[in-house]
Image (cartoon, helix red, strand yellow):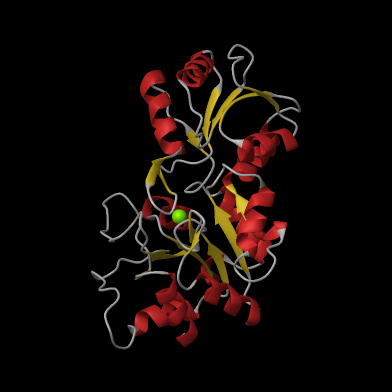
Length: 286
Ligand SMILES: [Mg+2]
C-alpha cells in the first residue's frame, strides 16, 4: 500500500505537492498515534487541537491508536479530552487493551500472566480475567511486558525464568524509547531487548506494528483499509504497522523522528509532514 517516495523535502515554503493532497483526498478515516503526534509527555503539540477540532466538525471518523501501556484508560480519556472535547472510551485503542484482548481469545480464564509493566497493562489483563503475578515463574503461561519505570533485576530474573520454563513471551509494545516531553526515556522495547538477550527467545509483539490494533481501529471506524490512514511519528512502528494492515500511512516528524530517512527492510510512508500542524494545513487544502 505504501508507495516509494521521492526524497521528500518537507517544510519548504510554497504550494504543497499535488501528490500529497491527492493522497490525503482519498482518506475517509484516520487512525491517530498519540505520543509524538498530539502530545509529547503532557505537552500538547502544535496543530493537535486544530486537527481534532476540524475532524469533529467535519464528521471525519477517527480513532486514537497508542502503544502506551503505562496508564489506565481513564488517564488517556482525561489527557485526550484536553484536545477540546471529551474523548469516548471507544475512540481510544491502547496496546495494553489490545494485548489483553488478543491473549484472552487464545486462553482460558484465570490464566497466569507474569507481568513487567505498569497499571495500564496490569488493569487491562485483570479486566480480561487473567491472574497477575510478578514472581511466580513456575505457574506463568505468559510473560507480558510493557514500559515499567520501576523495573528491577528481580523482575527481569523472574520473567527470564518463566520464559525458560516455557511461558510465551509477549511484548505489548516494542518502542525502545518514550519521549516524555523533555527527554527520551528507556521504554518497553528496551526491556524486551534485555529479555531476548538473556533467553534467546524473540518476543511476540501485540502492539504496533502488529496488526491487531489496526484491525480494531478499522472495525470502529467502519472504513476500508484503502480509504483509511495512519498518522504516526515512528516509521518502524506506525508506518510499518499500517502497511502490515493494508492501511495508508503518513509520517509526522517529532522529537523521536526529527528527520526521515527511508530504511531498507521497512515500508515507507506515502507522505511526510514536518509536524502535526503541517499535516493539518495540508488536510484543510485536500
Ligand atoms: Mg508516537
